[in-house]
Length: 316
Image (cartoon, rainbow, N blue to C red; front, side, top):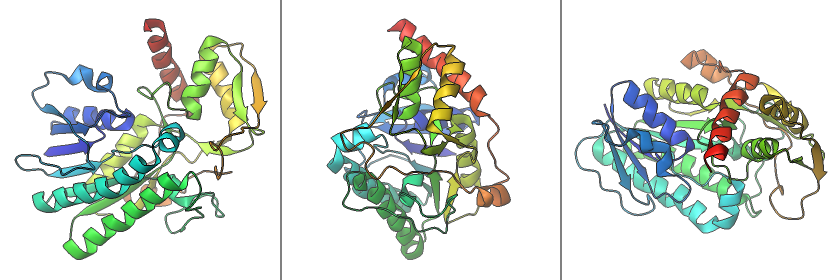
């Protein structure tokens, strides 16, 4: 197949490029490099079946030749990014989704929208399943990201129903692994970098909020299986093993072999406003229809991830 991956120089997108190339497909990565990096795809330079296009998907997209699949992962998913670039976040969710859907329609390509667990907001249902409509504050600071993805899902289904585009929607839960940006402000790189330096790990509030962390290789496998399936509605892909932030911090310290301690902070900015108290996927649909569940346990995944960050820090 010939496959276009927007956000292809990003954390998850670059891993998808690797996977599809390994499976023998031709891959085009498209990225404006606002949050992605050519470092993530530098090892693919010169690959005969790989091409990179530097382009912003909020503008008209032109790709010569046939396409079999379009995977739309371009996004600003980090709180640091969507709080700093709120309008761009909304534009990539709206205009970027519109442009990529139009391209899929023109090419008669199967389409995947990379959505997010943030469509559930601060959930009143736990764990979250795909039939839950969510509890989102549309005018809060996080609304620019949450609502951009909710709109993108609605637009994807409209193209499916009205234009008969062959669509897939993956709702991605917290994912971690090599190639995460060190400065993206999320808990995994924050904790790992602090532990590597021997600094205290900064835990917001009391650390009782919960998350469920999925290793990137498991996520990629779930996305590939979803693209090969006939599931048209949203599918949760994530790890249902739930931990508190305090528990997670201690796992990071153990993986790094650090003597770091924990420091508890009540943030004075908007980073944690409307932050979900609990986040855990119900993956029953993925188990039943895709035969998928995560294989990499959190301690093993953290060892792999901390090795990546340690290497980056050593080379800095």
